[in-house]
Image (cartoon, rainbow, N blue to C red; front, side, top):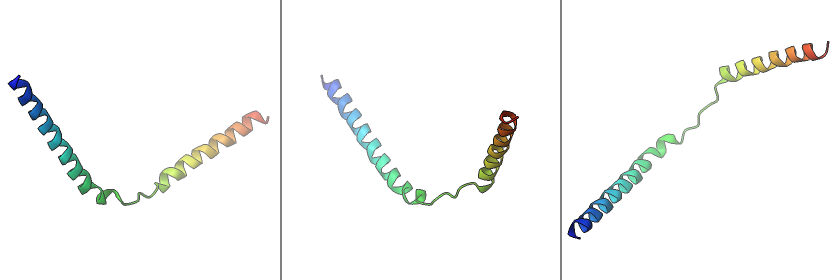
Length: 64
């Protein structure tokens, strides 16, 4: 019975320490993730060109 109480106390202490550490870590990381990521212009342009070429080819094939 005494061992069960010790195990329960150890588990609750570990969980409490883990939650405290997570809370501190999230408080530290919050300001660094507030910046805004700009879109990749070259990637967008490339995908748009691929879609345009595919659309042109489909129109040629279907409208013969």
